[in-house]
Length: 298
Image (cartoon, rainbow, N blue to C red; front, side):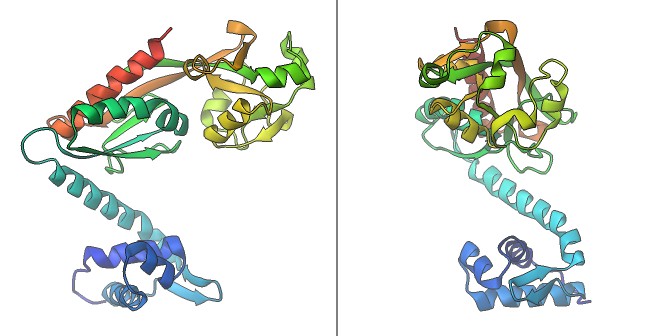
């Protein structure tokens, strides 16, 4: 094992080779040459004292040791990105980069007008928006601010409760003209339902309340909420939709009224170390205000 301390550029190349599966793919992703990435991997292997990849016909396959090191390299990557975001915010006024993560539907359908108003008030503020249903770890600084559909449990996070985003059962008017409007839940047996592919903890928690939600009954199964929403809007069938979004689309008809409803408990959270960051503070407050309006709009 080499006693020299490997530089971050070696770990960055290591991560990209794992992600891309080849030196050439990693080189393209990093904007480097293939020989440079190869030298980085060789140097890291010498420093660590063992092999990280095995060459196969499909490319480079990570060893068990490489996979065990990957989470630590990802932590370095997140810390490096957070450092650059923090550095970008120094200076007079509200400026720099803020990284926000939110669920797919909220990120695509709800946040853009909120962020547009924020950017209009603070034109030197740059925003990185990550639509993802994965619970991004704010402790690792994968993001500065997260909109989450569950209460954050880490004590070092600043969290503001927004309220419940109501979900209802909807269908497009065109679909109902073709297939008829179900009067009761039993009538759903004759309809095309839009639902999940893989069950989540949230879905398991509502099974007792909504026993008719079963994977084998869905005509369209998807774990992308955006794909499900698109299918609903084009008249594929019947599915869940945020009430606030449905109110903006007169073609969507709510079925069964309040008889079938769920709520997504919504929070905005950031690490307490960012409390005094002007760029994060103003963004946090804007998200809280904008999402509160969305939740409470008539």
